[in-house]
Length: 472
Ligand code: NAD
Image (cartoon, rainbow, N blue to C red):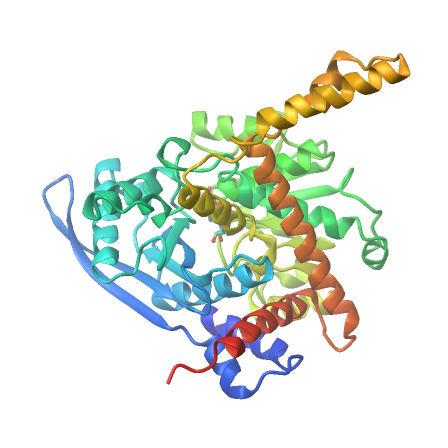
């Protein structure tokens, strides 16, 4: 089997088929779960700053409407093509199912390299793309809700919500047409770091399982583990931050221009600032430059976090990967051939489909916030604080002892929006990890964690479809 045989969408289908064998669903229903329900391919012109006209190629794919709205990010990349967007949309369906987010899967992509366009040009492209989605009813709080992905962020989401609201004036829930917005435009606190934090929560939960760690020849817990991160974008930066803050050593960070290594650990924020200032990740004080960026993937380490793009570990380099655990922060970082090679080597692969679901989980919280038109914590924060103060002072009176100033502020503190979002995310990632691992353990025929994740997803989507019946 060679890497060339499968497109990204075919790889997803292949993983699906591998798992479908372990479910009870009939072939027809499985075919419906697998199919991409709607593919919107569009072309539109944009006037560049130099006066020339360029035709832009873009997509929005709705993979499943077994639950609505559909949900999935928008990617800006030169590599965007229909197959890739279909694959990513399918992954979104399964991802939402695993983390109990009641959405169908979708994905969008615009075939541009954002570095080659001015901010004004990018704004025109984003707004025109949104207008095209509105025309075909491919965006809206109850139909399809985009979010950030590779090459996009809060800025683009703000342009999308503004375009939507100006074209649909008076729509009371209009802000819920997109997530990942800036806080001032209806965003939720904690969304920016959500995917990286979710990656950390998921890997930490696996690392806390003594039997799983024993099999990998590792000690329990993330503390002291060496971590390599590929990609210092939104997901990579935040993954690195939470591993470092929780006692792991991020020994290497790779970007596309190169990679740096320090056995004592790197601080992602200092590296980020260095890259911003100097234009490159290389030549960071105290770190060694690696000859090639992709060498990072082959370093000796406990945990490898690919957080850039798909297919970075393939038949050509999988044999050289030495990590004991791979946490798939990016979507589809391993080709099916790499998956097979690494499975044979005994590498534990924590699959993208649920590991990077933190973004969509917190997007769900943002959507709920927009629909309820109230900030999380607004109603209960003061009440909880007053209650905590009362409980504490009653206990102090009863015992004759007092707590320290630090303990007091910790105990009395009522939840802010970000506390509630983190708590919801942590609970979601812990639950999903156990559900997948339990499914894996319950059936010794299931070969790996990815297949177990697919089994969980297929069962949930299958149940929803079966309960819906067939539309005549
Ligand atoms: P991003 O654009 O913020 O960052 C990606 C980074 O990877 C960039 O800094 C880029 O320069 C770097 N990069 C590109 N090619 C590289 C290479 N070959 N080697 C090293 N670095 C390279 O994107 P992101 O939002 O962090 O997304 C990264 C991945 O995570 C994508 O696969 C995306 O689909 C997935 N993901 C993102 C989210 C989210 O909430 N942003 C959610 C789920 C999954």
